[in-house]
Length: 493
Ligand code: ADP
Image 1: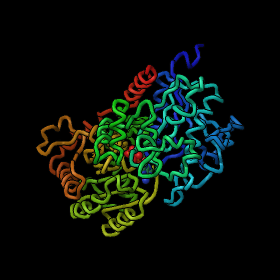
Image 2 (image 1 turned 180 degrees about the vertical axis):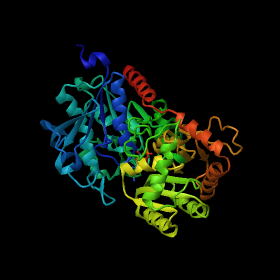
Image 3 (image 1 turned 180 degrees about the horizontal axis):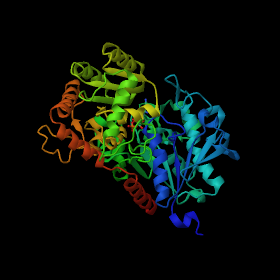
Image 4 (image 1 turned 60 degrees about the vertical axis):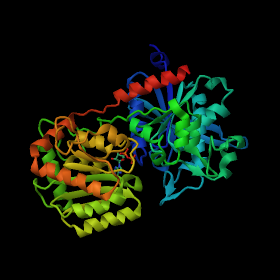
């Protein structure tokens, strides 16, 4: 039998700080799981490296490498070991260094970031090279993600530049969220092994601090924001999170690739987390899901009133500062709202207040629940996603599949995935949701009212848009092929 390497011609190591099913705070985890699986299907020999956090350690995956010394800088080598799991045929390697990863949180404890985050994730970044060597796995590509692995390109280009093992290796660097940049004090330079000459405005330096994301963009062979729309926004001053010079200098290295959706987990026809399954030809299961939700959370039962859903991290990014005032107005109308979210206590307080002042009409669950997120997608008639910025966004894609019309602000991946219904409904045969432009309370409210009118006054148009949305497909096959083409391109350079 031919070896995996011969079949694929590409060895790829993913290094990430999250992986859906094991540890997740957001969309990065979904991609870190689904993209390797899709690449593997396409014949790529892909492995994944993530930290062995406390929750993963508790599952006791087998230890495969007892001792992996990782020389992070000139002065210190860190003793690590490596455990291993297999998921959908993909090897998931777990970096164990308990002093760093056996902690209650991933990045913070009760919203206080761990002070040694640069060192923790610098170690993860450096370990990707040492793991490859230990496995005798010569990577054609190391595929890094977000600020946590922003050191990977630098290590390749500087620490391993003369190492023949990595002579043909290139780094692809995904930007899932450019707002989180891994800023840290310059005192971390020596720990991270950054040469002081590289602490300058063209490389790591940013207002006197180290900026790990910036360093990643500068040194990577290819930089991939997770939608073409977001890639464009990162080059504009107002939407680049302060890094537009860096993204513009990176020029052609920057290419947006839209995320796919893991329909194995997000399909109302097979979803085990929802009370009834359904598909586009028969939506009676969706009605059942709505009634079950209304009963479960104490909302008035019935079909005549549209149910709006929200599943979100509670952050500025998601637009809560203009959404909440818009909801206060909107709830004067006969509508229902079910919300699941965790994060900023300020927004959580506002949503609790909203629920308390609208009993029987609004239900808010503060927390993180995989199962409830599926049930909200299935039960709702509309899904609200008014983000200030959205690198790709997954929930609007899930919503379309569930026949739940997304209401989105037209930014980044939301713009790239949802076709908004025009005011005159002239594009009803193509539209897949509702859209609005301005990040304001007024525009959000207008979009919510457009949704209400669509549902109440023109049910045939609502059903048509619902069918269009359910027919829209965002599988990982297309993006996987785009990544394979990109791997080949950077490898030729
Ligand atoms: P982001 O990565 O910015 O949070 P995405 O839309 O790309 O936004 O991905 C969010 C993912 O996290 C989705 O899979 C969504 O269902 C999930 N999610 C967010 N908040 C919660 C929550 N409170 N409970 C369950 N799942 C959540």
